[in-house]
Image (cartoon, rainbow, N blue to C red; front, side, top):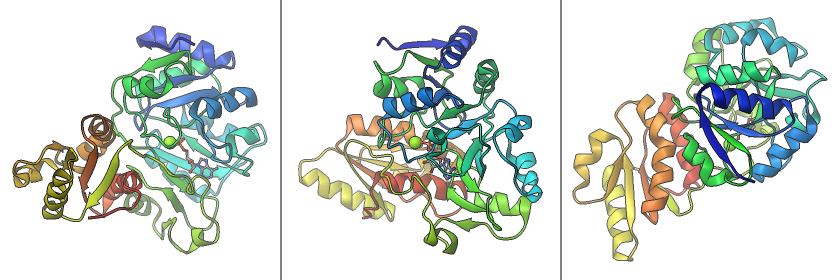
Length: 330
Ligand code: AMP
Ligand code: MG
């Protein structure tokens, strides 16, 4: 199959036609690029899993053009959570809610809940509106590979597997959405993202539990057992800039060709080490992290990423980097 990359109106029109006819296309969102299928069409949804090489027990997120449509995919949720819809939708927040019967098992991996998101990216919203159906989508990478934040990232993994990539430029947020389960008494973050626990608690009051908290210890979130975001070369997290430099020198001695990923302000501390600066504030670091990993795995054979912090959006970025590193620290 030939994979076309198109942008603008033409891309939206053609992409929506393919989705309505039961096909799969890649599309831009503000988080990362997705692989779209008509959520009402089980065969189309199966084709997404096939294109990605993803296990069928890892559910997809249903994407909607407008928050007014949320009621069409859920059988309802506690009114107290409407405040989250008002505060963070459209945006990088996925709500896990009780599913409505029209959404097939293929989308939800047989769960009685469904993940719902209303993206904010204007091109994405135009595409979703043109599709005219809820769009089930995972990230547009091969399973276990780094998520794509540009059309060319998607092309690397999906060339020959899908007919069309809708090019909307670089994803503005840069990591996947926050996934928040609101089916219980207290909200539980299943996957951290740009909408942080602090922001959610600020809107709702009360507690926001993390997946490592009590609630999830009893029932791990689907999807969490799979390895994600693995670059093709080894990757480690460095506790400090000095441990990054030490690790760099050791890898050099072994004949490796390492690279350090760090905040821009720390670059002057790296001496002669080769590095990529991720930017200064958390939003920049978040926007750049996947691009940096994509590039680093091509130009180096060992990636050392500075520990970028444990609070706010930096913690969400580190969630991805720690997965890329398989938990390895130096
Ligand atoms: P991806 O599309 O690759 O960003 O992955 C979507 C992720 O959303 C999955 O790996 C799940 O962790 C999460 N997710 C989607 N739907 C549900 C659901 N109904 N319950 C729990 N987690 C979900
Ligand atoms: Mg993914």
